[in-house]
Image (cartoon, rainbow, N blue to C red; front, top):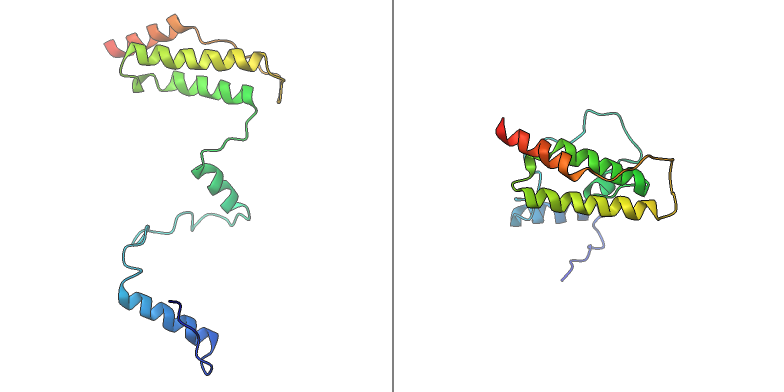
Length: 133
């Protein structure tokens, strides 16, 4: 049941009392971030920080589809070490090549971008070469 403010009590005193009682009950004891520095405290003030933070947490990207696929291809080539098997790598390449084909047949929604399918055999050869070294 929610406690009501006494008639003689100011809103500030009421809020302070509720906070003090919650602290006594330990309701603030294990909050996330407790004892850690406040992130980005030393950075310049940004009015849209909460929008950027929400987009980052939701892993939302505002890139046009063709640029997004191009970025995914670059990330694949930069992270070949993350693949533990050739079949896993070939599966990911197949997914990306399917996205490239879909992007070719969709309406262009961004700047003109040269987008070609990933050369599967070439990438697999690079992956194998990294395993040897």
